[in-house]
Length: 73
Image (cartoon, rainbow, N blue to C red; front, side, top):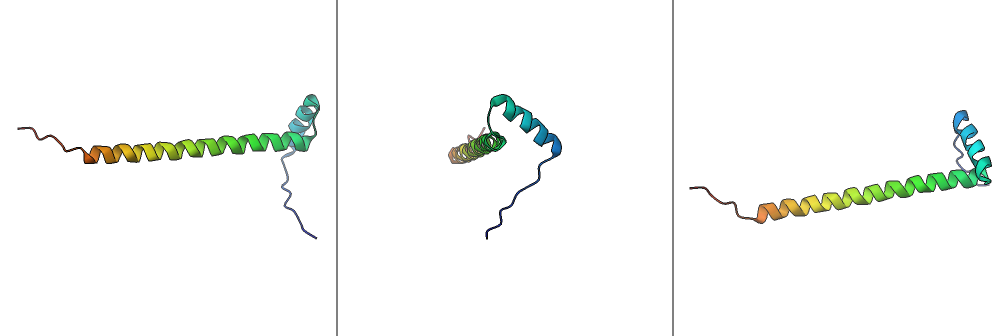
């Protein structure tokens, strides 16, 4: 028999989830799955943007190094 990890949520959160799910007419698990998936997707988008920003910064830095500095006389 496989045992699954089942985290305990704070009572206040369970209460809020219960009333929100009831208001939306969906099961609490459906609501929680949707909320968690949305949060994870948003986090992944932020990570992609950070990675893209880092890549862009690295390209800019390389471009600045490759430019020959002008010497003032």
